[in-house]
Structures are given as structure tokens and as C-alpha cells.
Image (cartoon, rainbow, N blue to C red):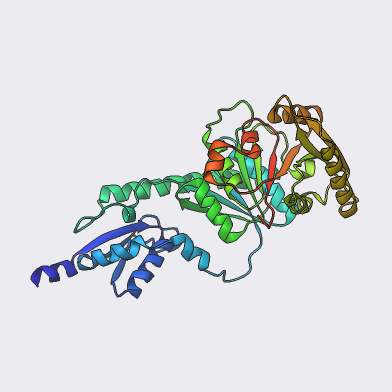
Length: 380
């Protein structure tokens, strides 16, 4: 009996989370009759607290662990309803690399053009997940480990503030538009957190950087962008570091890659929302390895549809010989015709399809210095 009383008096840490997730976990555990204590909260700004400790009485540990194992924070966040209508966002995942500012410049210009705010996002990874490792009879987070967690957060927050300082200088100089923007720091895998955020918030577009032509295929930035493109239903702009284009308003020629799929008509409607205010020529291009009369007929049908629905847009239609390879044919066409952006429709695919048969959008990320816009239709 005395041992049980001691366990009731002894507090153990069951999780370390951001303030928001710690509060969610506290509410869930308390609803099950478990007394919860929150430690390490920034009293002045609780919403930016890092490394918040969720502590309970040791006697409640076994029951608490069973509950924690079945918690899905993503499902909880998805179920939460927004308190008020917010302006649409352009989401900009940033990694604080040398060309992050170029990506931000394109995003701020885009936000101005389509009347949106900008949300900067950085996703950091911490190898410490206390709720997912085996627990002994009494689990306590060591102060040294807890300090590492807090150091990681403070480091990325410092880098974000440094980026914000640079952006504010550019805004004051007039080199980027004075657009309302904010930021969020998230823990996890970048591609997963970006996709989860997009699913919950539904941003108008995602703008990401990529290395472009002649860079390593396994480059981290390009790989994350590729995963987001294939897993996210939001339109994604991929901006290579060597691209001379800083905004849609400066574009003159855009390619829309077509494979004559029904989903492309919905993707075209999305594309028009981005370019409708500008005098931009759209070239519909189909890459084929052999002559096929049906391709000509389908291209004519696409031309008729576009001229009927978008009569004020200058267009061109052509079939490009792909015998030398699809990527090579596209690169040649883009270079010869001074194309400012490549756009295409794409559908979500399984992980196995992505591993063994990478989509054209993914492959182009590593073979192009031209911005790419990947569009997903509402029916996908």
C-alpha cells in the first residue's frame, strides 16, 4: 500500500511535445481520469514553447501508455474546425539554404498576384520520440535529452528569424511585395508534414525550391519536392535555383504537357486561374515515340476545347518526337522555344509505383532549370 502511495506521489514524464500537442494529450488523458501536469511552458508566449513535458503519476503510467499508443494527432487536427474564415495561403516550405530567398521571392510575387497571404514552413527532425519507444516500469526523460530537444527547436527558430529579417529588408527595399506572412515550425519528416498541412489548411499553392539540371538525383531538396508533388493534391510550383524567372507576370511562354487525359481539363482550369491576368502564350505539347494519327485528332480536339473556353489566350499545339527520350525531347523543346514554365497534370500514385516507375514530374525536377507547375484535379 505504501509503495502504491509513493508511485502516486512520484511524477514521470510520458511525452515531450510542442505546447499545442501537449495540451491535446493533457485533455485526452484527463478525460480518462488521469491527472496530468504540464512543465517547461513559456509563460509569456506559451504557443511557442518547445520541449513541453507531459507528466503523470507513476501509478497511472501503464494505462497512459495504452492511451498514447492509439492517439493520432493528425486525425485530431483534421477534425478541428477553423474558428473563422482566413485568407487563402501560399505555402512555402523553407530549408534556409542559399536559394531559399529566391523561392520566397517567387512565392511573395505569386501571393500578390492571386491575393493570398504567405505561410513559411520549416520542418525539423528530432530523433527523440518518447511515446514510441519501449517504457520500463518508470520512465523519466533525462534532462540532457530534454535539453537537446529544446536546443534543436531554438536553433531552427533562430534560423527562421534570420530569414524573416532578410525578407523584411527586401520588403523595405521594394524588391519583394509587402505581403502579410507568418511562419510555422513543425517536427517530423518534411514531405509528410507538408502534405498533412496541405490536407488540413488547403493552401492555394505550394512553392518549393529544387536544384535543377546537372545536380545529383539524390539531392535532399529535390527529393522532398518530388515527394510533395506526388503526394500532395495542392498545385505545386517547383522553382530551380538557376531559374531567371521570379514571377508569373514576367512569363511569356508556358508549356502544358498533355497526354489527352480527362483530368487535364480540370488542371487547365486551375492553370488559367494563375495566368488569366497576363499575356502568356500556352503551348500544348504531346511527346510521342512514333507517329499516330489519333494523336493529331486528339490534339485538334484539345485545341477546339481551349479556343471555345479561353478565346483570349494565345495558344500553340504540337507533337514532339520522343524517340531520343522524353526528358531529352522536352529539354530541347524548352531551350529552342524559350519556355518560361512547364505545367502538367499529375495524379497521386502508390509508393511502389513511385519507387519502380518515377513519374515525369519527379524526373524533370532533376533535369530542368525551368520552373515546373504540377496540377492535381479535384477528381483525383
